[in-house]
Image 1 (cartoon, rainbow, N blue to C red):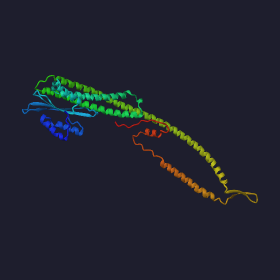
Image 2: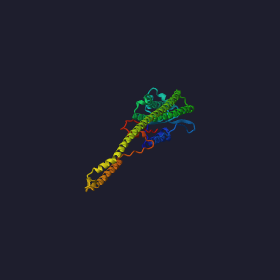
Image 3: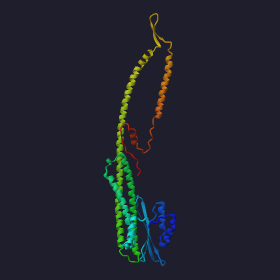
Image 4: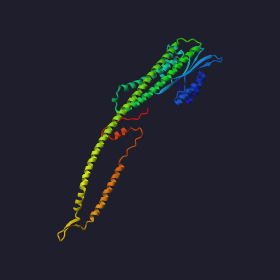
Length: 386
């Protein structure tokens, strides 16, 4: 059964304690799990004695972890008590029993093979087998996802697909670590069940029939757990290798892009140098002709007249309205220079400031975005937190 522990069901736990002898520590472990999501139940067994001091029952507390429908970790807590002096069925309280194990136990109880449930720790073996099956299916789905990444070459990914692949591989590695943790807990619980099973056989004063099959099943499950755990460890390493491959190849792509940017920058510098040389030539020619142009323009104005005196000598005469030239030229020059200064300052204010690149920010991506109009570049640089 899977009781839902709420504040109003404390009386139920108290009734179970009085009726079946379930220890309060077992219910405390359930409330600790629900409150903090941490497993605070270990695997332990203890002996109850009768008033005469002789052994009477053997109680066991253990747990298994498996994965639910949505991939979250579910912990199944089990308390059992079996008599060592009377041929009586064992008492079980199971919280979060796996669905497959529950159906199998109910089917056996209602069928002709109900006596198989009377074997010591047979129910624990059923639960362990179903938990191992669920964890194995979850591991198989992770393995299948990993194989798809290994069969696809790096060239088949675009920059955005590569980033998504690395994120999914990180998530896959996290799930595989959950699987490995569940298998480690299961291995520890199976070893505990084997030891408490042997303890029950040594202390029991009643004969049991066909009990070796339970121990053999637990040993087989322990061996299967070790095998799957080794495979999970192997796939965790392979996921790490694949992540490093994607990351290193992505860095190589960024390096090639940086080289392209460097070559493009050098070409721009050469073109700018050529433009500067052309402008210097134009400026030099302009400076060479500027004095002559100025003198020609000055003496071609109507303010200067060449006249002859009575002796026939020519002289330069200044017109009576010469003052109009400085009166118009000087303010117009001030207006022109003022307009030019205002235009320059307006340009400086409208130029966007370059953002300050923080430590660890991909510089290649920033440069490539700025140079898209010159040459289309593709970059892939991401910061991943393992």
